[in-house]
Image 1 (tube, rainbow, N blue to C red):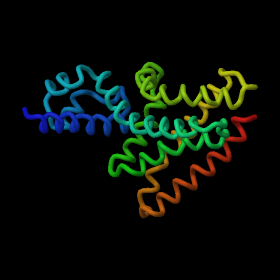
Image 2: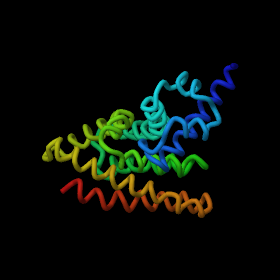
Image 3: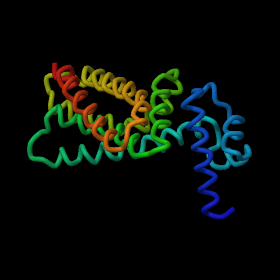
Amino acid sequence: MGKNSSADTKEQILNAAERLFASLGFAGTSLRAVIREADVNLAAIHYYFGSKEELFVAVVRRVAAPIVGRQLQRLAILEESDNLPSVAEILEAFIAPPLEVVLERPPLGPIHAQFIGRCRAEPYPVQKLAEPEFARSQQRFLYILTKVLPNQSPTELRWKLDLVVAMLVRILNQMEQLEMLNEKSCVEEIENIVERLVIFITVGISA
């Protein structure tokens, strides 16, 4: 098996698994179903991923990596300033990347959005498989929020940031409605959503 065909096979499996996990959930998705959807054999899944749990984590990692990377890039720009950023600037850096990544990746974008929503709705043992892939950015954002809002405890801010994530997941689950819009309208709609969310959440997280 050549390098390109190997990469293609792995991508086929990830694409099929993500579609199934997004629509059926972790418990509702069997490796047999992934095999049928990806048109591969069981040996290929075991070779690349080992188990259903490892396959799920690989899908989460693929979805999370561009989002987390862009969040941390934006946060790094804010951290380079001599002054502490505002709560609104921090929230914009946290909220905008997931929406942008989903918009920029047709036809996978809506599936990414559905998959992220499904991860959030899974039982805790499954959520726990997904959490580490998003934890790096969430911990960094929580840290800077504790510096900008020193009168609030880390526990309270962690709870508030978790509510922000829940709101973000809700918005992501509605992203399919934007598919009917043209690209320019989609970009404007995302900017509008981010602006409204930042205004709304800034008041609550600062209180």
